[in-house]
Structures are given as C-alpha cells and as structure tokens.
Amino acid sequence: MLTPITPKTASVKASSEKPNKFKSLVFNSDWDKFVEEWTPKIYQYLIGALGPFGREPLPTILPMSDGPHMSGATASFNMDTGQVRLCPSVEGNPGQTLEKLTHEFTHGSYALFPSSDEFYDEGYVDFSTWVLVHAPIYGEYRQQAIDAAAYNIKMRRERAMKNLSNYDRKRWAGGCFASMFLGPMILHRMRMKKAEGDYTW
Image (tube, rainbow, N blue to C red; front, side, top):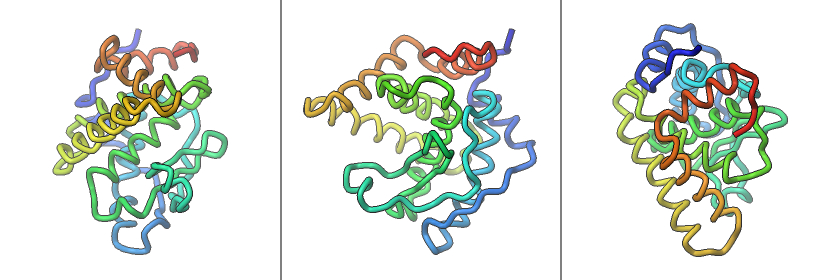
C-alpha cells in the first residue's frame, strides 16, 4: 500500500532529485531561463506526488500561437507528443508561469486516463494544480502560484455561469466535484490508481 503523499513531502523529495534538462524557446528573453530553472523542479515534484508520467513532456517548451490564446488558452499539453506550449503573455508573471507549467505537466502525469471528458481531464487537473502549488517547493513564488491557480478556477466558474458552452460547464463542475468530494487527497487517489494500473477517473 502506498504511503499518502502530500504536497509538502513530495516537495522535499523533489528538492533532492537530480534535475532533468528542459529548454524554453518561448520568450526570447531571460524569462526562458526562469522557465528552464523551474521545469525540472516541477517535473521531479510531480513524480513524487503523482508517480510516473503517463506521457513524458518533451524537453523543449515552445510558444503558443495566437489562435489558441485568443480563445482563452495560455498553455497547452499535447497528449500525443508531450509537447508543452506557453503563451508569451505570462512573461514576467512568476505565479502564472509556475501554475501553467504545473497544470500542463499534470496533464502529462494523468495522460493514461481517458481524455474525452473535460469534467475529469480538465476539472480534475484544475483542482489538482491548486492542491499541488501549495507545496514548499515553490518557495518565494508559492503564494503567487496559489493565487494564479485560484484565479484560474474563478475564471472557470465565471465562464460556466455564463452558460455558453458544455465545455465550460463541465470543466468547472469537475473541479468543483473534485474539491468537494476528494479534496487534497486527490493526489494520493490518482497516484494509487496509477500504481494499481486502474486508469479510471
């Protein structure tokens, strides 16, 4: 039986791991170095918190094109390739940058679970990200990352309340369900399911 993992214990483990190499080609500025400093930490932290990745993220972080950003996205994870993309608009905002990297890497961690229902594959990731960013590993940017995750959930609620799309309604409802019925133990639940080979939400 797996010992329950909390953001704090996973954070301590991640700080002692040998970092993986990631390269950012998003900003063409020093903000790429910020991303390159943090992606290995987040990667190792998620392994400690959630177990092995279902789809390994590719080592090069690429910029997101204008089209998806105009529709409201600021980051993405390609389930087929593991490609992570960030919108250049997050430059200079450490909380949002770390929240987005954590969110997209969590998609990679959960990649073997069905990805056909935004109730789970977005709602659960939204809430998991909020839990994850409470870890000490985020250091001086911890509160900013928490605030960014909370803002993301707030925006999901506002979009759902406008009642314009099934996607928005189901995504917010999934995160709300995860919050109310799983709480912080969502990390242990997902890690244990992966260890058991039970890829059902």
